[in-house]
Image (cartoon, rainbow, N blue to C red; front, side, top):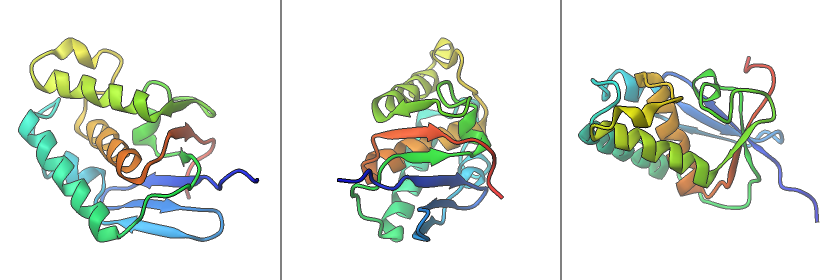
Length: 153
């Protein structure tokens, strides 16, 4: 049995693109700026801001009509994600459980524990990227995200 094809994850200001080398592509109409500028008014975001952002991403996932399935791992070159611990260098990876742990640290910081953000980029765009990644991995059943070399063109 051959390995599944990896799915490339690209985060832009107003969309999130999931694409495979064979030309398959799904575009979610939500991006980093849609959360970081329009919803996140605090660094780190408040619990209410996080909940609103989750709703927005989940709505985009539902509208995208992407079904979960065996698509392999996520691969990303997006700068907003490459700032996360565990994705900074080419080939580094995070499991879904590790992404969830990072998100839970951000949620803890939103509840008043600023020490939870240690080693995490705490700006709106970084928080937005982490939230989008978490929701894609959870709802589309990806188990791993890996940092790719180079950059998107």
